[in-house]
Image (cartoon, rainbow over all chains, first blue to last red; front, top):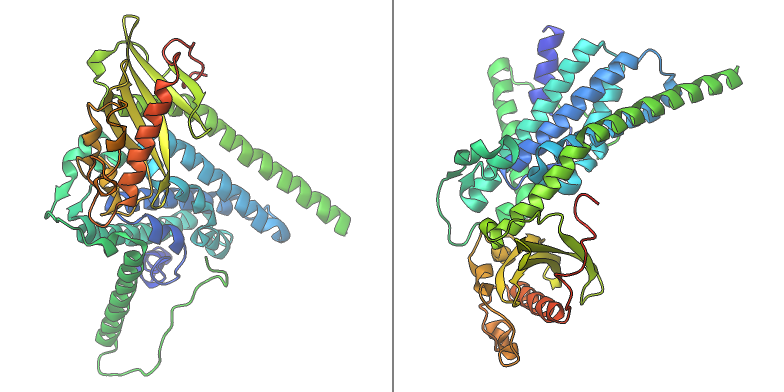
Length: 234
Length: 207
């Protein structure tokens, strides 16, 4: 596989930051009570990841090994603050909804993880692509989780679309069904854990099926485990 | 040469600190005005939900005073005026005793301290139960509209469970009780403040 394809496959599916590496779970579980909240945080994270991977990759040859982590942290913290300010300026209400979880992107291990594991060893172009794919993988999980919880809990989809896309997007909001008493647990934090668990199970199930298709009759007994590229986890 | 290495590392770290701080500062300067404008818009948007925009013509977000309220906390009070006539006050207040902590409220009263409307601006109440205090979820918060506090109806300012006139939600009494009490206390406090309209503005986005 070419490196570009390999990176995409790793980021979106095989080594998905949320489903496989289990990184950044705190914001992931906390904000995904609607699709729009999920998309908002996902986009913010994607943007930070892109910026940090590119900058780390550009400066990788000039940073002595001993001080690389403080440098990464400075780059990431500064980017997150910028994203925070920009969101505060241009998506004020969404920023109010996501609140503390925007500054908390700093602590998302997926970002420093990619800086350390990929960007510090590869050229800016590949690093940018890696950030895009990892970020998209994370964004997709946030969006799917948000969508499922919103449908189950509120019976709506895209509620609050105007917070992210401006006034014109209000009509995007879909009322799928009306619930007198909503399915509370989906909106509450336990719902996030349950749906997340189901998503991981579903992914593993499909992985197994794909593996069986590829391997065909040759039944491999070998159990492959996904590995995290860093020892540290959030 | 460890000394040389340390010096080099320190210089590089300093450079990075300068560049990243610079980037942050630059973004801050670029977004500062926009953020201030958005904050002002948000205040006006909240106020316009409860004081009809055609009732006043002043710059309500900046005609604002800071006062220590009945809970000894500093809160903002916005004054709406039409051609120098006092129209209404929008008082920021909060219920300290919600089911999940503090519930931020905005209470609008006319010059006779009759309630024009109440809105929840921030809260952490349970979704599906306590969050019916949001106007998006239920009309409950509108049951304050048009009410005022008189000596003879003070007893009625409570949820029905406590012998008052306000409905509580099924499975959530603490939330509406906290909101009713907060609105009542705010009103009683405001009635004791004679100069809410006349004091010179000392807050708002511009200051």
